Length: 86
Image (cartoon, rainbow, N blue to C red; front, side, top):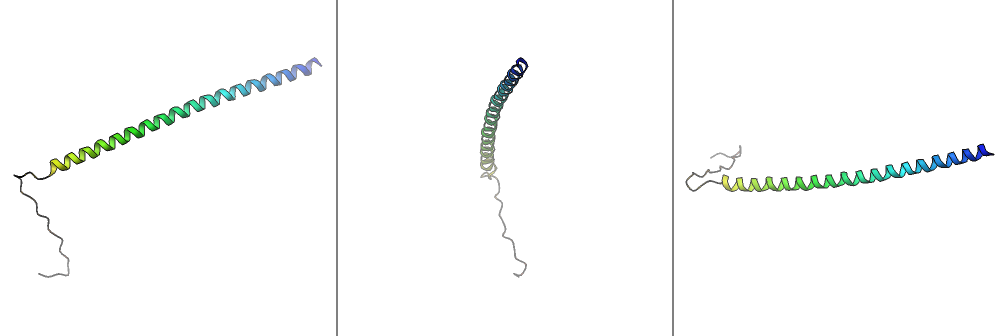
């Protein structure tokens, strides 16, 4: 009967070991998942800031790109339709 008790103890030890290992893996996976999500959120914030900077630069360029009082203003011609004759 000692052999059977040893086998039961060995099985119980192995079960406890595997459960402990799975808990450690789950804990590490959870920690890594939180880290990845945090970094993705941080990247999203940086992208938003970059987009805002680009829009600010576009706005500045639009203001700087407007014709100065000394520069001649360009007159936009309306497209002529092919059916009209003048």
